Length: 195
Ligand code: GDP
Ligand code: MG
Image 1 (tube, rainbow, N blue to C red):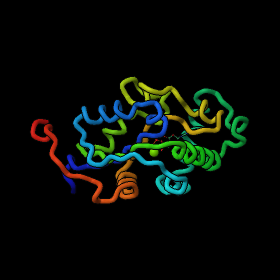
Image 2 (image 1 turned 180 degrees about the horizontal axis):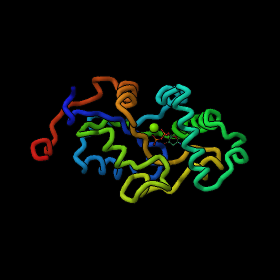
Image 3 (image 1 turned 45 degrees about the horizontal axis):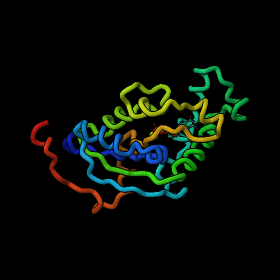
Image 4 (image 1 turned 90 degrees about the vertical axis):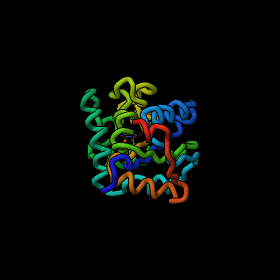
């Protein structure tokens, strides 16, 4: 088993973060937490890459649809009327295709982050998927107020600034998908001796 300090996760600054000039602010939040950036690069993805970055299985697409339907129920929105369907697989498919448009609409910044419980820590710093539900102090809570009811009405993805791996499986797949081993660096940060 790997030392907990060596856990790795993938963080992507989505096009809205780059276009709003928030890259430095977000990187700084990661660094000041004591998490180590061990790879970083700006890139412009194509649709096929984004399609392969996210899981393609039915279970994941259904889960995506369920998130929207839950948000609709909370705000008393009628999914069938708004979207033409309240089937989680159909709705999840729609959300997934909007997501691909969003993430190919401009340059992004990808990075690999290493540190204690890096996957959960970075998710915590990012905040939950819907910025409207995110606490102040999180990236999504501090810089956005978007949610599914608004985004779906405009037939677009929720603009929530960052992508962060959710599980060990996602992290492993995403890191090797976006970075070659020689683009990831091992080095010592000053805090390694202190924290
Ligand atoms: P994440 O891990 O927090 O990024 O969330 P997911 O993996 O569930 O979803 C991937 C991305 O799809 C999110 O970051 C949003 O940009 C977008 N998204 C998720 N759920 C919805 C939704 O219900 N409606 C819309 N329009 N976009 C969504
Ligand atoms: Mg996710």
